Length: 380
Image 1: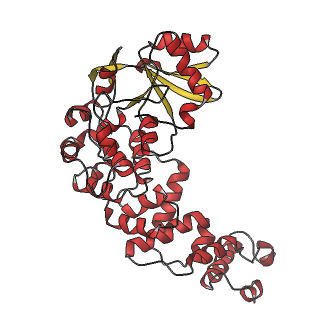
Image 2: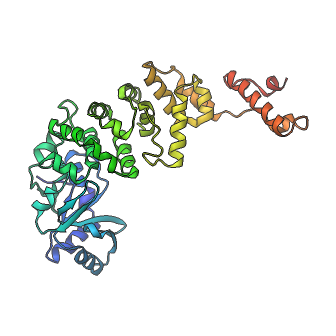
Image 3: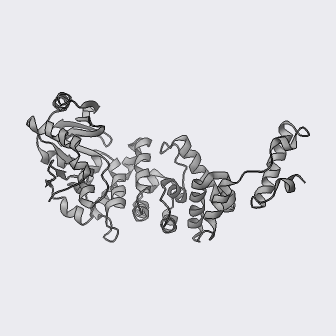
């Protein structure tokens, strides 16, 4: 079996592989690029595994004229930039010791040992520079069946890195067969070891949950997360029941992880997921709009098209009812509207706090009118 694609055939990428192979070392594409190419999905990152030690990789790449950055050299990874394309090149590894958050690794010259330390069988696939696929653990049948399984013993893989619990649900949402359901052994291990999630950093949890919620349809995976007690570990008080209706309502609309997060409810994840200030602000705007009955035009005026769209679809999902038939046009109208009264219209008769209070009162009247009251009507 072979993989193909522009990412593989790119001359710069082939030159990186050739530099290693001509020096007597293996250069094997691994992980997401191979998996996605086999599935016909877009390839975002080019990862290469090799039996060359990190310093050797650096020396070979620099001699070939490439830029080299020791981005994870303690774990065996260097990033080689060729024609502006980053290639993460990692030496074959085997785990020596793990604590559920980080691993002590030893370098290896065997692809089988490298494959054994990977998380899922569909991620333990390799390909040579000519595209020929290498499958040391028999992961191809799982990939073709869209069956997500841990490599070897699920409990052991999770204890190596508790983030793999969240990755289990994320990868199932993106690559699993929803009709086949989730792997029972993996699910049982995730449920049993879910307390280990509390040892993970907020940044790692937040990054993983963003990716999960951005999947085309994360609802089945999130529902199973809740049943297994995993969702409560990352978002206490969350309820996934409105997520499936939201996915249905989103048809024709791009999915947005923050919108989906809002319908889950529960504890504000701004700190526990390390949301940025902008993300926290936007999340709270959408969440607060769920308890209001503001018209679409008003939401468009207050929040802009994007967040108003999030709020209206999320609110409809929460009450299990379709949004108003003209909501998109109304959101656009509100987003383009300008409050017709200016401070100068009320001066010099009003100043300071009195001026601000009067402007807020008039704006409230204007919003109540559906953003249709004229300046003359408001001042008259």
